[in-house]
Length: 428
Length: 55
Image 1 (tube, rainbow over the protein chains, first blue to last red):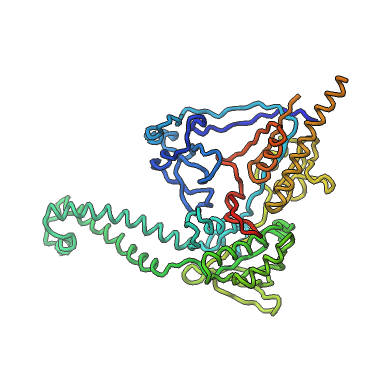
Image 2 (cartoon, one colour):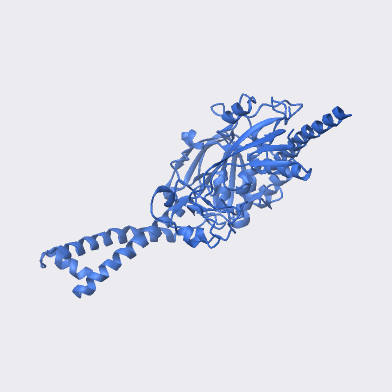
């Protein structure tokens, strides 16, 4: 105990930490747009980026998978922009050798992928989202500035923007022809089609461009008309135990999801007072200080209805509205209800890399794939000197993670203080 | 003999462990695979039951 040799790969950021001032000018100028993982793909970021606005460190990072320069294309705009001269495309990964007395595993968890449950149609219906995706929609610093816009509407708006850009480009080209020939494209096209004009190359091109223009403007007008009817989502359904308490996936209760859904429903109601929410669950597990009161307050003041029953299926109705089919076990009836959006309270799954990390460390995992511990020493792994905390050990909420983290820190500190005690007694 | 600790994962648990150890005067190496620390909690808008901001 008390002596581990660790090799760590420090990945290249391609930005020198001691020079970068975190000003963000590089990010502004970067031409490459990539879906943003922090916002669960609901927003975009650049190829040089800060993982999130308040992220620590504030040093930007270049994503080597998407950066043009690092993929052999001509770019380097960030390097030209950076006044601190912090961009370094030649930076390499560094291998660090560390000697440590103790190790704390705080590897966290993965959100269960609900596409494993085909009847919920998570990957087919755009307005069925996970709780963490909904969290980003609620966030004032998120992709929608805290407005609960439906993903189908967000996608339509993005499409409108894209079509408008294309239309703009096409109409600029048309304008050049119009000026050259002194007539509108519409008039020209009529004459061209009736065969009044000689079909030289340039006129052919003009006609083709006008056809392209019509091909864009039609669908664009249609989409814009649809977009007039868009508003934020006001009828919400929360579905509990998605992957948890389900013998096909994880038999355990993930613990925090009931409270998470109630919180999201309360916040959504705070943002938009007309919002109503239905929380579908076998039971609501509000175990913790102030939790039950929070659940009751949600029902009384935030428009939440608690429905006891497990959802059988989600269908797509008109206007991308999800329709929830469930059994109301109080009335013993199968019902269907339409919503603007459905939020899936996904299970807390062991993180993908945990088995390989466990192998490296020599620690054991439990039957579910979390780090194995003993009920009387809940932060000790099977290897002395290696401790665990947070959702790497089992599903838990933030206060529990923090409590366990302090406990693990204390256990690690014990190793070091015992070491120095032993040294002292050896000297004496 | 080493007096340092390795913390694997920079979410709320890893950050709390690291801070506690550092407050005790112990040197900590905090390893995180993503460009920023914060983990899942940084993605949360607010936390129950007080509706405090997560960040």
